[in-house]
Image (cartoon, rainbow, N blue to C red; front, side, top):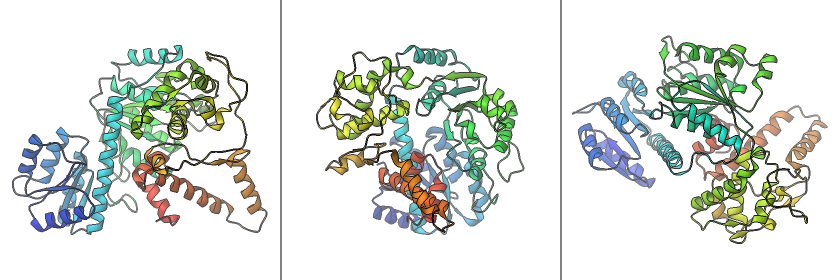
Amino acid sequence: MKPIWIVDDDQSIRFVLEKALLREQLPSRSFTNARDVLAALEEDKAPQVLVSDIRMPGGSGLDLLDQVKAKYPGLPVIIMTAYSDLDSAVSAFQGGAFEYLPKPFDLSKAVELIRRAVEESQREEVADEAMTEAPEMLGQAPAMQDVFRAIGRLSQSNVTVMITGESGSGKELVARALHKHSPRANGPFVAINTAAIPKDLLESELFGHERGAFTGAQTMRRGRFEQADGGTLFLDEIGDMPFDLQTRLLRVLSDGHFYRVGGHSAVKTNVRVIAATHQNLEQRVKEGVFREDLFHRLNVIRLRLPALRERREDIPMLTRHFLQQSARQLGVEPKRISDAALAWIGQFAFPGNVRQLENMCHWLTVMAPAQVIEPKDLPPEVAVTETAPALPVLTGALPLTEASATVPVPADMAVLQKLPDVPAVLTVLEGGWEQGLEAEASALLATDRTDVWDTLTARFESRLIQAALTATRGRRIDAAQKLGIGRNTITRKIQELGLE
């Protein structure tokens, strides 16, 4: 890991932070002024995180922030400030500061803040590396070629695009491709799933908030529209956006102005909006839950992304690609797959689309016993029977089965922990977990209890969060991202559910 740079003319501050980071096994490097930092940036690689005081001889922390962000826009910068400088610190957010640290600070909170910045930095590095190394999209099927041609035609346009398609079909990949091949490619790409954020937090996530706008708003925070200024904002699952927020969104799309929550000054932003949904928005309009004027504003160009079952000829290529990808993530030799196994996979319905195929390949990389994957190695849901399908398989689909099956747990659980997004290793009960939940609910409802909803919801959320934290080895930010919820939401849920 790259070191954390500390910039402060106060030797005691530098010493305390250095020792605290050393105890956390986080490397650090200290500077006494902004001039030395800028000189070091010319000679060395950028740090993992920059922690800087505001008032220093030879240049302020705010000036340093501006110069660092111009060269390294993804570098998290934490501004340290005395209470008398809070107004200056708040204005630093407009320059892209990650957070501010008021002096005098609690050392444990300072380390926690720095660790959050490190996690944010590492996640951005992984995302950038993945976008650089991996092919944007794969597909030879005619339906996918139509999508590729549409992306090409839109490459020099800033027009608003609506992407429709089933969950897991790759709508965000299309949005990223539209951004990468647009005139805004050098600007930020910011994505937000509007269905995954609670209604009371979504407005602040989109438009930001002023300090003191609500309980807990201790600082001014920029929303996604400001973060995406000069670039692209991807609004996923737009059909689930609350009705009152749809009005605010329409105003931004109309004139590019909005107000932060609790703010009185209009903020101007220059953002290209790409929206996506798996729902029928025309039907949502008829039902009165989606604004018709917003629908027409978003529906300038519509791209329909085909489901995986509509492009079965791409399944072999995608399968081999995901097996290679999983092997790289694990640092193991890529597994090969036989034509017979591909034939079985090709006849599966894939209700989860490309995302489900990717997860299946993660599972096979860990669970398949040999280097060559055969039909008998496939997961239970593929439903291998004695009658083999014909090759090549381009059409048709086997129905999903409800057969009970127990997946053995491998001895080397460390391998599983290294793999992101690997499906849970579970005993699949006949009828699925939904029927088990229904049976549990029925049993509780038959009693005199009046807290069935809270009880089952708490148990469900606890297991879901625990599984996500296990998959991310305790990293809350990564767990929240995988669950599709906000960082503050997962922290609040952990406290409410007693999972500390």
